[in-house]
View 1: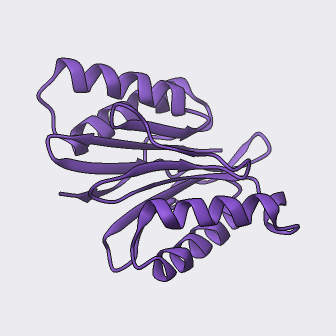
View 2: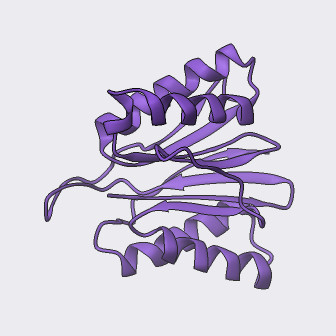
Length: 173
């Protein structure tokens, strides 16, 4: 599994993902990029779960974004509907966290499209640790969104065996 964290703070957005890829109980890769820019760099998305499934879903989401002319909520709903109903897609085991300047959404194969209340969201095995740390840092520090993601992911990496400290961060400001 992995950890992806998104933070919207001080009119900026940062999404970070760790680089660990595991196969069973073994870490087989340490610097994978699970966070990508989509739709001409205007949208940032990350996945947690199976790498092949996550990449397939990112590709599908980007196609939906093009059809929706960059409308992230519309593309997310369309992806969730297709993901839930399609015989092949519904077997994909991954979660997506997507964001643009206005929206941040968690998308699942169960049909969930969830926008966090507080501008902080995480997915993956270390997501709970990362989101807890990020919420504390948002409330009690003057750090930037990028720095909050970096520090929160570092905390998650110390607690979750499926999360490492080789963090890749993409920003929108």
